[in-house]
Length: 205
Image (tube, rainbow, N blue to C red; front, top):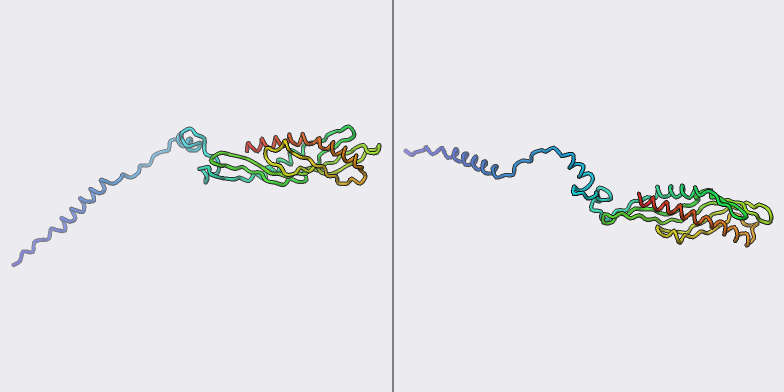
């Protein structure tokens, strides 16, 4: 009769499997242990990179600071109109004039971040509406028109040009227009000063 007592093999296999599991889990990396974030480390991460350097400029998505352009038109247009609209009036030997409003403010202002360095710039074309009164033919003559400033850019204020455009000059002789235009170009210096203020504020944005 054959001997059929060979059944313990599965138990041996199970034992070998448990031994392998113990060995495998013993060599595995331990599970991470939760740690409370140090408040100082959190502040350092928010304000920089933890080594004392300032945080990178630009948006969160552009932490490398490679290239990013920000449109500042809304702020710039409003600020230019506020600054130049407050020029007030000037008096001349035979007349006076004031700036009513900035009738045209066309252009762009922007901030560019390149390699984590901030640069600003703008291109604008302006027109300021004026009204005044001059002595013409021994009587006071009301004069209206515009002071046009052709397109200019950041850093070009010293080369700014002012062109006079009369709304109604039918009663003005050539000499009258030349004299009045010369007087009106006295607004150039205060306009340049206001635009220097604008450039400084733009750099601080």
